[in-house]
Amino acid sequence: METDVLVIGAGNAAMCAALAAREQGARVLVLEKSSKKERGGNSAFTAGAIRVAYRGIEDLLQLIPDLTEEEMANTDFGSYTEDQYFDDLCRVTQDRIDPELASILASQSFDTLRWMCKHNVRFAPIYGRQAFKVNGKFSFWGGLTIEAVGGGPGLVQSLHEAAEREGISVLYHARAIELLCDDDGVRGVRVLWEGKSTEIIAKSVVLAAGGFQSNLEMRTRYLGPGWEFAKVRGTRFNTGDALQMALKIGARPFGHWSGCHAVGWDRNAPEFGDLVVGDGFQKHSYPFGIMVNAMGERFLDEGADFRNYTYAKYGREILNQPGQFAWQIFDQKVRHLLRDEYRIRQVTKVTAPTLEELANKLEGVDHYKFLVTVKQFNQSIRTEIPFNPNVKDGRCTVGLSIPKSNWANPMDQGPYEAYAVTCGITFTFGGLKINGHGEVLNEDEKPIPGLYAAGEIVGGLFYFNYPGGSGLAAGAVFGKRAGECAGRLAVMKS
Ligand SMILES: Cc1cc2nc3c(=O)[nH]c(=O)nc-3n(C[C@H](O)[C@H](O)[C@H](O)COP(=O)(O)OP(=O)(O)OC[C@H]3O[C@@H](n4cnc5c(N)ncnc54)[C@H](O)[C@@H]3O)c2cc1C
Image (tube, rainbow, N blue to C red; front, top):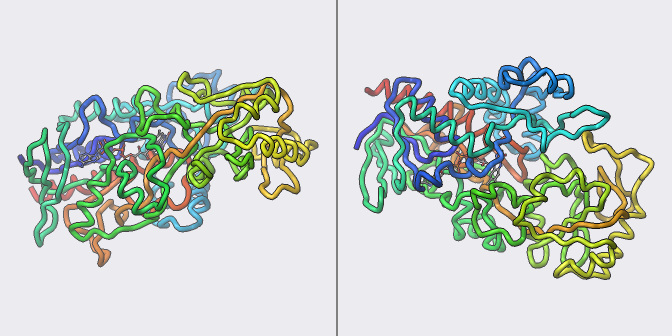
């Protein structure tokens, strides 16, 4: 078999790369390890939230042309500038992010989403999750304003439909296992297709096959002891194959190889993601309650920042607790603020009219210590500061060894609700080094001719933490760039 551009993976980054390469006039073939039904990798598990820079409503209207007059009148969409995007990327990654990649992501996000719209990807405001109604008006917060219509499955479906329209074929059950290369660079891939080994020759290859979070051995080797106990939030197919293939031919490893995106995830969720439940096992309303461990103690600042800037690192904190679990506790005052995921059927939840009764129901928790923790927490709150979920309200605790910096409310109105969580790993941060064109660099920082990468397989973007919605944005931005360059190269070679 032979093609111009071969794309490995069929998630968001891969399909953006495939479409961009096709626009250059190249013949494109996509290889996907899973069945057609399970296609779309982690991208299909998302809610489709995507971080984009915009100057205001005029820009948003280009991405969401069907925004209604009523929505515009009732909503403060604010703005999210390229500078804010860049600053957020640097801030949450403790300034370790590759500045060139950060700058490209922030500055190209809007144009890339506009380009996706041309391929019939549709976007909508994320009212349910990113805006609370205060004084009759919705207000967006945390730099995350839009989502793909239909969430992750909708996004994957739209991209695959666009690929079909453009004559791009996808081979399913096709697992890339080796890069074919010689002194002139990469010239194809060895594939296990429906169990049989075969070679596919290509003028350029784009690796977009995700990270290694679903490979228990690699996870434990690189992230460290204990990570074998994490549950995988998304696809079981991202096992680091393409990463290993690239490293084997001298690609340079880059980024935070012992780091990953991991969140609070239902304690009884299955070992891998379930497409029917999607991201419903996550429990992300902790900024409005408290989280306690087996010793009945709080162990992190639930209100350190908007959830968009803390959730991706708190999974690791939960994994580090005895028994790798925690309980999130809420009282009636904040119940209406809980996200939809708290109301799914597959939830590990207990309720009780009083704190004492709740304490008895918190499996694995020191009951007495839990009650002491709540008492001390309730007494420490600066209640004179008004509560406002749309802003970092500064309503904090004083005098606690582990503070709560915003949205602190006394736990005093039953019935109380508690949700058991463990660590759910989303994706790994370590990956390959690329340049701004998406070319994969070798140990000497020189491009490996014919080899490109995009998406979770890229290293150097995320360290320690991650601003919500930037995974899909990065996949789209760098997928498009890698596809354009791979397509141009292939056409030049033809
Ligand atoms: C539950 C959940 C919710 C999330 N929510 C969001 C969100 O709302 N917003 C956001 O920005 N990010 C979110 N993320 C993160 C986001 O999913 C990823 O950052 C992004 O989708 C990665 O895209 P990708 O194309 O790099 O990888 P993927 O979408 O994972 O695609 C990789 C593909 O490669 C295939 N593959 C793997 N190995 C091989 C091989 N050897 N040969 C052939 N094919 C192979 C896989 O089967 C898969 O289809 C979420 C993730 C999860 C799990």
